Image (tube, rainbow, N blue to C red; front, side, top):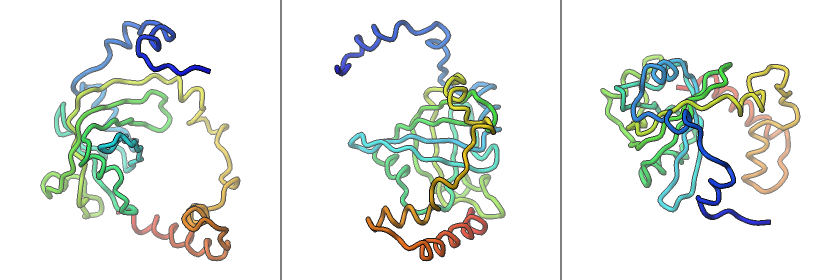
Length: 208
């Protein structure tokens, strides 16, 4: 078993990059990227801290929740969560981010890379208000790279194919899993069911 440590060796094994793949990267949002972002209700944002420790976090809201300020700038609203703020702490330490935008039912995805900062300006965040409640913070991204990603991963995984969807019953509820992981011991289902009910209620009343 060997490990590849040189880019030249990797390239020799993978072959040349196709012309379209090599030239498709833009440095701004064009009309197609804008249209995709305006219809996307979900993204994953990748960050890393000052030591290179990486993290990927999901963000979701109604389609168009990411505001396009101009061809080089995006604002992602921050909604109530568990207050771990892993993504934002990483951005403070290392502003480089990678974002993958998705649209349910569409296999092509959009990738945006750039530099981010955390903002708390009420004027910039006001357009992201839901039910009259603007976010307290946002992630402002200066776009450096934009390109579409092909459908192969989604075709292989059948992610949007209803026939490939699985029943949730093979795992216990979120509360039960997290409680056992946090305590490093088995948890009584009656106790975890109570916490699970609280989580489900929070989903109904605490999204914004």
